Image (tube, rainbow, N blue to C red; front, side):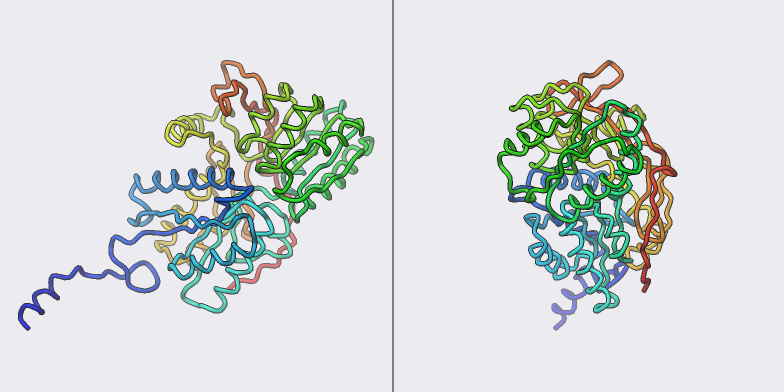
Length: 414
């Protein structure tokens, strides 16, 4: 009996965590990364995973969040909403209170609803959903959700900024729209039509195509239609292999038009652009570019590329993780309920310079937006992409106040 008592005293003391059930003092903050790690979206999913793992290491090197280490838990959803729900339940079963996802707005809608239902049924065991790239406007409008926070500009914000730029380019006369056939792609086409009609009624829409998401392996027939239409410009929200293969088919066919894109900078995109020979004729709109010249972001890019061996596709992921840490420290807690309250209305200095704010009304992060073109570089642009010798160059910047559209969200708060 005396030996048993001594053995019991030698056991490590359990410490109460910041929230929930008892855990060891050296517990970790786990973030479930629910994105494609197989299938057609695997290239972007793997790039996102490496990015979040790098950011977790950065936070951990600085002492973690409230003294706890951050761990990214990969959960492969194959870009499928139903599979995403299975992975979200795995996260719940593993005691994970934070999930992040970005590829596919249909997936995002499913996860947002899952988290809302889970939290209503399990008070005291809440979880938060951090959205870093799913940009269907409905997620912060009709289907807004208190437990969902989005760090990427929604597609309406991006199209507002993009069409403001396009209206000042008189050479644009005929536009072809090609997008993925799901909620996000449909939103891009709808808003492009509406905004171009309002800002440049002289522009003719000569084609409007929707195609299956991440299913097309040869875009040659679509490129043939664009060529036959006489378009001088193409607008597309395509991402992942759908933008890389689309641009590759354009190169193969010798299609010489200007491209206005959301995600041409993703895996394989820069290589495909270089093959087209379109020097500074492919444009992208996003929240930051490597060659913007802001010293802190330039230094971050250098270190990131040296360690991860890819360029930073997601400056918004940096903003997300840093704001998560700041919100927890503001709340002095890792309780998701308290972190959510701290995030609402939070102002933050974004990676690429300038102020951003997490709008309280709908949990949409508002931030400066950049329009850049891809092509040959000067000494002022140090970063190329995918070993092409070409890189992104800033052509326009839209400050936060101008990169804002209203919301119809009627937030239901707990």
